[in-house]
Amino acid sequence: MDDYYSAEEEDCYYSSDQESLNGIDNEESDLLQPLSSKKSNTQVITQESLLAAQREDLLRVMDLLSIKEHHARTLLIHYQWDVEKLFAVFVEKGKDSLFSAAGVTLFDSQFDNSSFPLLSCDVCIEDLPRDQMTRMDCGHCYCNSCWTEHFTVQINEGQSKRIRCMAHQCNAICDEDIVRNLVSKRRPDLAKKFDRFLLESYIEDNKMVKWCPSTPHCGNAIRAEDDKLCEVECSCGLQFCFSCLCQAHSPCSCLMWELWRKKCRDESETINWITVHTKLCPKCCKPVEKNGGCNLVRCICGQCFCWLCGGATGSDHTYRTIAGHSCGRYQDDKEKQMERAKRDLDRYTHYHHRYKAHTDSSKLEDKLRDTILEKVTKSEKRELKLKDFSWVTNGLDRLFRSRRVLSYSYAFAYYMFGEELFNDEMTPEVREIKKNLFEDQQQQLEGNVEKLSQFLEEPFDEFSDDKVMEIRIQIINLSVAVDTLCKKMYECIENDLLGSLQLGIHNIAPYRSKGIEQAAEFYASWNSSGPDKLQPLDSAGTSGVTTRPEQASGSRSSEDTISSSQKRLKKEGSFINNKVTLLDLNLPADFIDQN
Image (cartoon, rainbow, N blue to C red; front, side, top):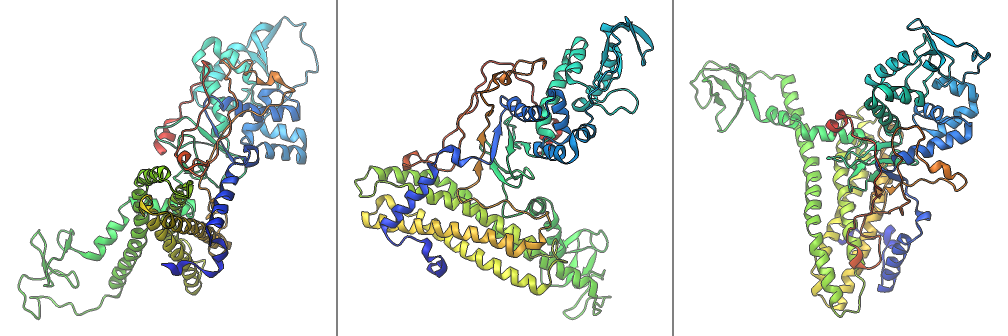
C-alpha cells in the first residue's frame, strides 16, 4: 500500500523526527489561539439563553429605527428574523414601505377626544366609558371585551405571533402588550401560551436558527451566523446537518442523503431481488424460487409452469420437452426488464456493501478507542525518550473522520454516476470520465485510511524507542496524507463533479480538517452603555431569565489540548438556571414525530 503516497503530496510529509515534532507543535498552537480569534460560526441557544438571543436582535432593530419592542418584533417575524434583510429593505425602500409590508402602523391622532366621556364600540354597538375602550396603533378603537374575545380566538387558532386588528381590511398587527394585559385578566393560561409563541417564534420563524433534532430532545437550538449549509455539533453531543436536520452526511447533498436513506430503509431492493431470482406462478401469482436444475417448476398451489417463460404447463416432461408447452419465442421487453432489474440490484449492492463496510469499521474502531488510550497511558509511564503521545489520539481522530467521509462518498457516487438524478445532465462519455476521476481519488483515500488503521492497532506500548519513533512518523505522515486527500476529494466534488450541476440543489457542507465544529454557547453581547437593556421584558408576564457569559467552547475532538492524557472527551459546561421561572418550551408534537 506504499504506492498510495503520491509525489505531489511529498512536501506534506515529515521525513524526520524533528520535523514531525514541529508539525505537532504547529497543529496544537492553532488550537491554543484565543477564543476571540477562533469565533465559532454556530452557537447553542439553551432554554435559559433563548430570551437573551431574541432580545439581542430586537435591540438592534429598536436602536436603528427608534421604535417600540413590539413593533421591532413584528418586523422581525415578518422578515423571518433576518436583521440584515430588514436593514436592506429599510435602506432601499424607506421606513414607510418597510412598516406597511409588515403590518406596522403608527397612528397619529388628529383630534383629542379626551373630552368625550363615552365611546362607541362598532362591534357590540355599545357606548362605554373610556377606561373600557382600547385603541390600537392603527387607530381602531373597540371595547376591551370584544378585543379579548378576538385575541382568545386568535391564540387558540395558533395565530398569536401576528394577531391582526379586527377592523375590516386592516392589516395592522396588534400591540402584544395590550394583548397580554387583556387576555391575562380572563385567561392567564392563554397569556402564558401567547408569551411562549412569541418567544419560540425566534426559532420557528428564523431560517438561521433550528431546534436540535436529538431524541429525546435536549431543549437546545442552534444558530448559524453566516451559512446555513454546514454541519454542527450540539452541546448534547449530536452531530447533524443544519440544512436538513439529518445526521451529518457530507460529501452527500441533502437530497442524495434523503434518497439513500429511503433506499436503504424501504423494500425497493427486496423487490428487485424478487424480480431477478423468482418467477410468478401463473395461477396464484405468488413468487416462486427455483431450487433445482429442471425448468419444470411446481408451485405450492399445485400449478406447474415453465421456468424459462413462466407459462403454465402440464405435469409431464422429458429431458427435451415439457408436455403441452413450447417456449421458443423471444420476448424482448420482458428480458430487458429483468436484465435492468438485475443490473440495478448489482450496482446498489456494490455501493451499499462498501458504505456498510466503512460504517461497520468505524463502529469497531470506536470500540478500540479505550484500548488505544490504555496503550498511551502505559507508554507514558515507561521510561522512553518520547514523552508526548498526542500523535496517537490525533491519528485516531483523523481515522474516524476519514472513515465517515469514505462511507458517505459511496452513497454520493451511487447517485452522482447513476441515472436517477443526472441522466439528462451528462453524456455517457462525460459520466465515465468523471467517474474514473472520482474513483481514483476515492481509492487513494481508502488505501491510506486502511494503512493508518493498521498502524494505530500496532502494540506500540511494547516497542522500543526506535520502533516507537518509526511508528510515530508513519502515523503523522498518514494523518497528513489522509487530511490532504479528503480536501482534494471535496474539491473534486464541488468543482469537477457537481460544478454547474449544483443549481442550488446539490450543495454540500464544506470540509473541516478538525472535524465537525461544535457550536459555542451563546451569551448576550450588550454594550455597557445600556445596563437597562439587560432587564427582562417589562410586561412579559414572566420572570426574566438571567444568563451569565460562558466561555465559548471549541471543537470536541481530542486535538483540543496539549498533553495526551488530557485528550479524553470532556463534557462542556452549560448555562445555570439561577432559580428563575422559565417559559415552557415544549416542542410541538409534529416536530418530535418527524425526528
